[in-house]
Length: 157
View 1: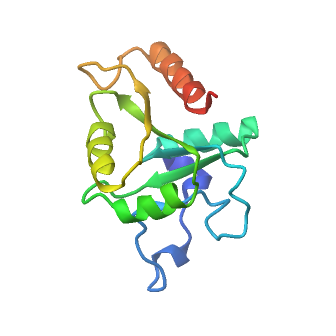
View 2: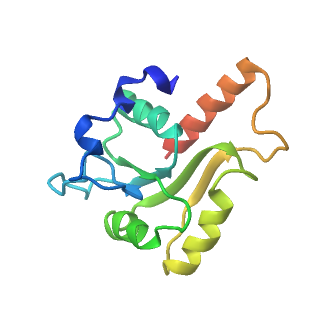
């Protein structure tokens, strides 16, 4: 549950006048510009709760070659920030959009169509559950298996 996830807690400073909403949040390991990005081979873009699952797996597996970038605003698409953060920030890296929703739901189709038009040469691969009529299987064990497979595929070489 995100309610008790200590990593997802914001500080008081995050809500003061000195901060502002970030439409795209770069991987915190590289956001300040001091860490070497040249070793990043894969950029995972996502939105929402899946970020915390991806970050937990990245840390557990020691994947220093993967950056995770959060898109916090879906409309209007922050294409300039995505271009600066992903396309220019990690040149040559493979970009993947990871979503917990099925392929025919979630932000994938909207982002893929619009980013291709707005950022020349920008491509990304979708990692999601298979297309289906419902948002979840309704069976907890199947959901857990699908979630584990989704995370494995997100980091697969």
